[in-house]
Length: 315
Image 1 (cartoon, helix red, strand yellow):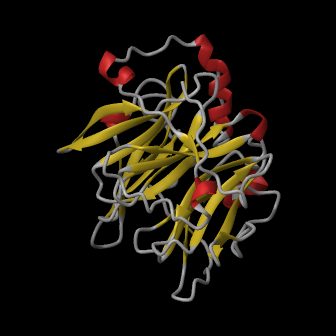
Image 2 (cartoon, helix red, strand yellow):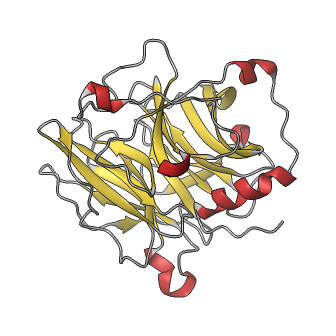
């Protein structure tokens, strides 16, 4: 089956076609150690649409996330602030593109001074919403947004780029369907040298002949959460750094009938947020612990504790 790459809608397309593909072999340890998750979406954010990919300022006062319709035909960035112990009603940030265009996959840099995201604004007249590139927008000390700047080649390409994330060392990870990869889409890492020039390399040890769409890197650069359809549906696969290589770990547990997208590590790497279809409630944000000593203060506790986490049944 030939698939175009209109950004996140490809995840939906591959979720539908994956039943035609043989499931990749997975060792018993990874299968039995899969983790269950709980629904986390704050009431103020939850709609009949799909909320995913939340990113937070260091003080927990600001959150930016992506909202899409169920078919991922239209999606936008939304921002919400923690005021008097409640998340405010989400609204589009001041730098949002025209409503006909797509903005998505936000990531607040560890220092809180910039936000990375993807957008179709650069070639909309030519390609519509079929080509995503990575942008960065500055955030000043008063919390005001600047003007988004498109990252240069070789970070961006004539193909699509997805889910940018940056570790404390400044290494930028993202997914792309550019030519020369191991599968339909691959994970890449970009590093900027002292002269400001970007250098991009394929993260070969996490890529497969399948579609490896997205990756979030932990703040310390020791973990990757990779979204891939190698196992029938788009699932989140965890990796840990070992020198210059990445060693596979757990696969996040979930309903095999739906896909997972938009992983986000906690600052200590002990917890993970991600998006998953929730049936009648549409797409919701889920939380999973990756370590017994994970920081319980993340995600930021802006709502009463009895409304923050609603346990759900996970396979």
